[in-house]
Length: 108
Length: 116
Image 1 (cartoon, each protein chain N blue to C red):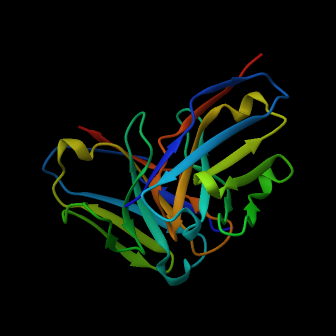
Image 2 (cartoon, rainbow over the protein chains, first blue to last red; image 1 turned 60 degrees about the horizontal axis):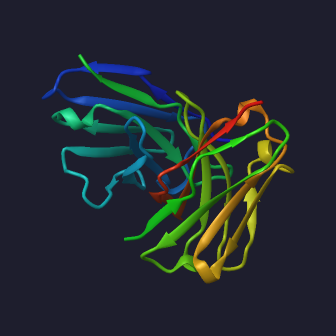
């Protein structure tokens, strides 16, 4: 089983700042089959990024994903108030499917 | 684009079973797998298993083997997840999601509370 470790656990930033979230896999994620989701309280997760670097429909270009192998990151270039939420990475290249434990992005 | 709408909240006693439904619309139901994920309050996402709506094939996470059953009714584009022998630790929000490799879209979630 591929274990995904996200860091930091909590990130405190101000609107307008840049956020970089990390997701490290215990083994190489095949074909960069890694996705990122945003989750707000009381809501289902929402797809942001798939295949490590492809933005989902409707996701603004200030949100980007990068990485390959075992190291991946999600970057939000200029934080907007609506970006403060919990973010999860997800690998779907190997069974069983696994998720990271999440990074909480909070307003400083 | 597609949408998944799940059934409403459930309260069950320990030892009982629960069945959650997930109705698909806006796309061909049999063309994409459906996966189920749960989330306990304040916790992360836990994958439970997958189902192919076209042929009914399933695959379950080892943790849930023997307790979970995923089925479908193609005539009404609906997937089901049944979890048996419920215990308090099964209290969580249960999500279905369409699989395109990645998960998109997700259902709105169904809260299942297990309490005596």
